[in-house]
Length: 320
Image: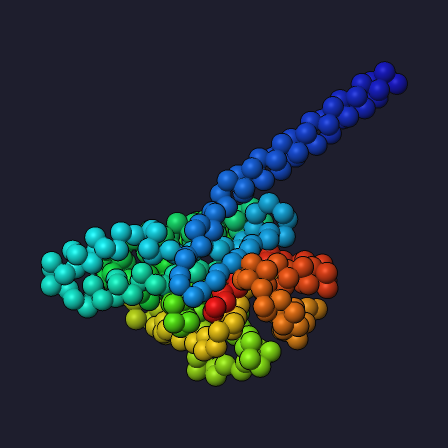
């Protein structure tokens, strides 16, 4: 009997060791896939008079639900070739739009609900959907239009795969998103889907300036409500109803040295221990530096103030 108990103990120990080893292997595998799935931000747009720097810090140190990606129109697309084709086709308006893109850069920031491996996978899916759609938009319209985000929202509403990836398919299958384009004049045009609003820091007044709410119009997060105007809207009815059409907001960095911040709620939110006043002080102390210097100063100040509890993404845009 004692021999039987001893044998069982040995077997249980072997099974426990195997389970532990399997858990470790699965964890390493998940981390590897998450790392590989995490899209790189890409080339930061080079725009005369505009300095841009961004950083994304996953809570788990490997990969999370935040997404940062850029569109350097001049580097990504052959604008001169597209302009010639538009002119040959008699599309003068399209040619003018394409010409302006030579001095414009796009920035997309998104925050998938959650910060696990599956959330990183959803962020990667959004990354591919956005850049594929952007290519179609450039071919059809010579620019990225709101139609791209209407289509992405519809697709994410419809996708059972994306909902199944969420920890709570009914409540956590959405994504907040902001996409904006900054021009060499300091004009920032953007669409927001439930994302924290941009902050504008005035170098002259040494503080964040108040922005009228009619310039900060935001819509429900991506994947939460289908558009009421979509042809298939009633085929995909959701309990929360339907959203209105997206519209574009416009902000202007009027003074040289002004700073625009885009971020996810891992940096600051209404109930955060790190306040907007603390953030303003961090920007003020670093305002004479480059966008990278300001970005690093903010992150250092944020991490020194309180432990990071969420994925954190920050983009600093400085008008030089």
